[in-house]
Image 1 (tube, rainbow, N blue to C red):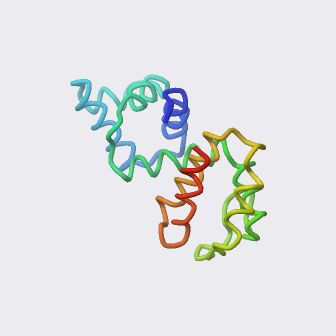
Image 2: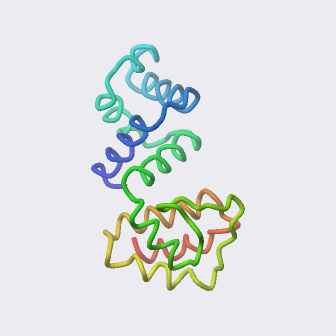
Image 3: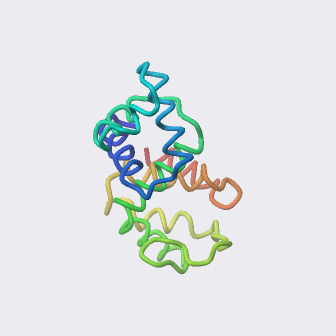
Length: 150
């Protein structure tokens, strides 16, 4: 992921509704890397925490997942909505309405085609990769399409 995108994802993470566990884990990661105390990190403003977090390449799955979800909710809802419309999945502004909605893998190529060219390739690739990573059983085939996109 390009540094500028990593920073946007980190900003979205810290700006999202606070999650004590994930924000705490992120503060510990930052503290360990930069030799700070976690309490000091939590006292920083969001922009400083985002800059520090964006420089960490190895983070826990829970922090990475929360950061990616926060980023997509904050900045990528229009793309998510177009994709889900093409998939025929009911959603509210890009948020899937049914918790156990199962995607039809036969619609993947058309849905990816609906967002290609309309949105930056890096954003499309990240979205598809995020879906595949979060639920490999349902969205795993998107991983191959994301590799082709990226």
